[in-house]
Image (cartoon, rainbow, N blue to C red; front, side, top):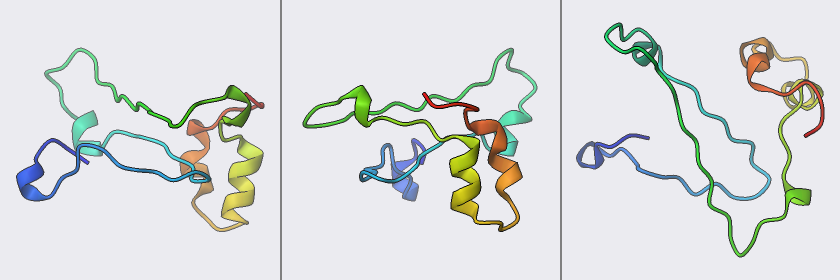
Length: 85
């Protein structure tokens, strides 16, 4: 992902249903010292329509099920919600 399409970066991705998605900043972007604020924006366009009943945020319990005991889940624990939303 990125704005340099001449180097093969993509401006957007098509993510099919049933796939969890997240965003996070790269280490080099977090280390930029001349910015007052650093942030990341993830947007979503859905079609043919959107219903909140079909939308879920990943919970810690679901994260642990996905990782099935494999090491590494703790790295992502800060990105999940504690309860259902």
